[in-house]
Length: 116
Length: 114
Image (cartoon, rainbow over all chains, first blue to last red; front, side):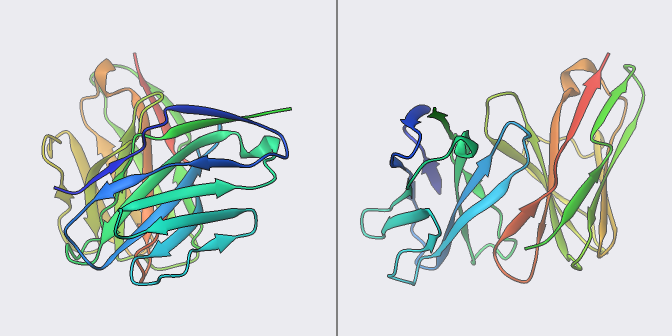
């Protein structure tokens, strides 16, 4: 069975500092996609970053970058220059092409608090 | 990305009544939509996959007769909670899958059953 694990229930970081959220997954598939979503207090799920498993280059989106280690099945999110608006729940998600429906498997989430 | 709306954003109903939640893809035609349920401080739980023009595919443990899903057009899917009870109170979120693997989410609907 495919699983996604986020081992850090809560984290905090000082404003302007850097923080890394961890995510590991388990799959026997070779073609898949990984995502980080942010859910602020408004509860709107917002796509932060997306990684295709067949691409070796780590995805980046402005202050957000990932460290994708395919062999280790690890997909961590680094937030640089943290801002108060980054305070949110962060979910790691996984999907494969084989099911045909692209259903997501979500991790349990990491609650990040950015401190002023 | 896609812009997804949900209506209503918050609904309160009496036990035993039915509630309909709409999910609209505003700028893309979506052949596949998903419905999730989220309890406080928990992750999203997939309830069903909604395909335009065909019956929804429900996840194990989700009652089909209680949570009716209709994907009548490429831009609209509805979730009807029938004979709602207090234990159905939750936050319901829909998402749209475009041609790629990425899902875009609606803002969610908070359901409170008294």
